[in-house]
Image (cartoon, rainbow, N blue to C red; front, side, top):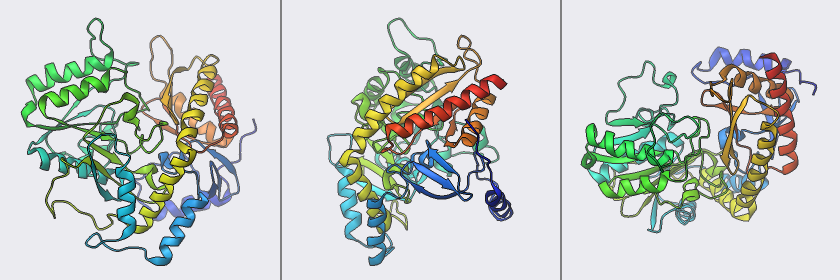
Length: 439
């Protein structure tokens, strides 16, 4: 496969301008400067064409510039662009009714809307403390929940995010995520690793450091996002739910990356038939427009007027894009995510047989992680190899993102075709082959 000549002249010039004026705090994967996109394909400003296996970190869920989404945005812009959350408008109510109807719990749901994932997490934190009158939380190592100060207290995927920002919000205790591929706790006979993690929470954390009667909530990503698309064992969520019920602890389900059909079900936690109390959403909910929020049981969302708010809550343009996104999901994108996701997992499992550097392929729907190792027996993380693969895939014409220390994330638009999956996987395997040869 002949690599693209990237970055091109136009991109290099743009990078110089970028470096002169834009904050250096933004993490940049590689020098891709986008000009336009259509569906699951994107073009850079030098005219190079790429297949998109990242979709803006699972944001462009309906593909780039889907006509139905574009039309909904244009129609709303012609009416009005913004009215503050001090007032009312129909699109806000209609979108909230639609998203509330998807709630993964039987009780009626209420909705709070903001404009990002980290704001959704902040709202969930405040609501949990307001509703329970408790102050402590439990989170999980490897998780990413955002970078604002409340959500950052839960984020533990990299120390880089916390460096120079201490002290964090108090009251958050972390425990191991149920990663059965890399277990760090001892399992009892007959229990899966997820059950072992919950036993550790009850017998160690709640017994020795965090009083259960003072614990407001446990917050978890049903599938780790930036942490490497780790899928928990089957026994984890049912026993975690029972633990929460036993002590009156809320279960906060952070679906910012995994939700909105990404796994082939509307909410990822539905893969385990467990009902959370609060759901955080953002990213793919509005196909690229800034929108996020929380769903909560009506009995839980009982905070008084003025307790929380946001200027951009219920923005009409974002809500219009959200409505179009929900309609497209119902119209076949959920089915496509499940079917093409299963096909992709099978194809990657076959690719794995040819590449000893692949330690594990995992995922649900179109949320798939590939973990690279130096040796399958020792499972030593092959971070440099992973980075090389991501870079080579870019030069082959494939947009991917890393995850965790040594994973590649695959999260294309939910309507991607099997033909584009095949083309992208060929680009990826070529990158793996050449990187392995160089290692």
